[in-house]
Length: 113
Image 1 (cartoon, rainbow, N blue to C red):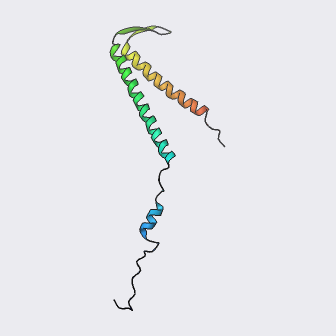
Image 2 (cartoon, helix red, strand yellow):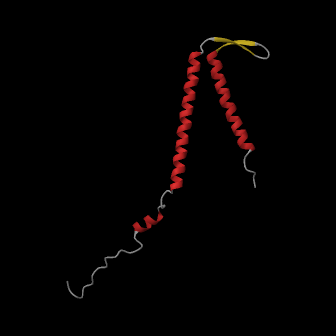
């Protein structure tokens, strides 16, 4: 090497593209956020498990109650299969639960500013 030749600078400039990419990425998930995400996932699994258990109970009720029954209405009576009565009651309960949940949420919402 000639004494007049310059040695190339081994340092890399600060404006390298990899440095810019590293700065644009988030620092990471905090412990609290990770715990909250895990708790939310666990709650969803519990909810799904309960929904499946209730569906199994409903199917068992339908299978066990295949006979016919006399249903007395206010203005008359009818003979229906217990299967349809159980299914109708389950659907009616689901719809009423949804309507009441929406009503409670609407009545207890935060006031508009």
